[in-house]
Length: 194
Ligand SMILES: [Zn+2]
Image 1 (cartoon, protein in one colour):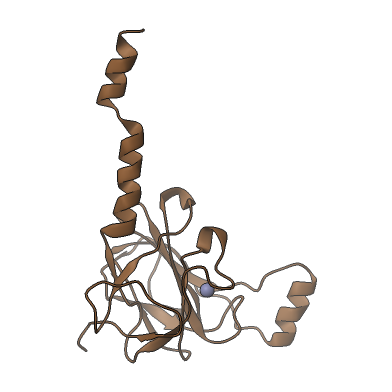
Image 2 (tube, protein in one colour):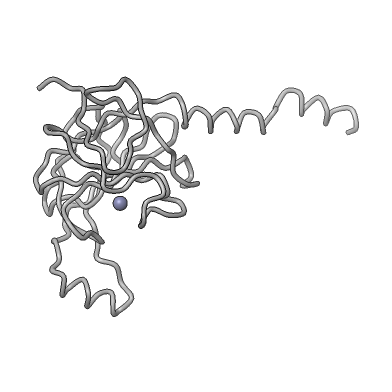
């Protein structure tokens, strides 16, 4: 045993590998701005008021309902929910009093490194992809809305590490920059020519 253990450790350096993966998430992939058309304002960026804990690096983009939402990165659709209605303020209050959250329509895309992006608050019947479908960056996923815990129409976008271990602060390619982190209060649009 005293002979094999160090050997195993030499061939399977588990901890350094894990660190490498983390760095990959952080630095390697540059995402598309996940919607078509005009520049939209980032109303919450990393560590925003409601972006805490596992979702600390989520980004909210304010936009009108029915804005086309596109995949920010290639992947496979692992969740597609479009059945929820947008609730009135009164209905939301009532749910809150019962200790419940209003449900949001959502698309989740798994990327090849195991990370997952969620696109949330989509329009009722406004999802255009199905579970199991492969998508390319730029493909239309559906339409923005105001479903779920939301005080106005917007897209909530967040990339989670594999296994749901927290979110990743990701860089985006915009119409003005090759790769940047987004700031709250600024407007961005993607670099695609339509
Ligand atoms: Zn959000």
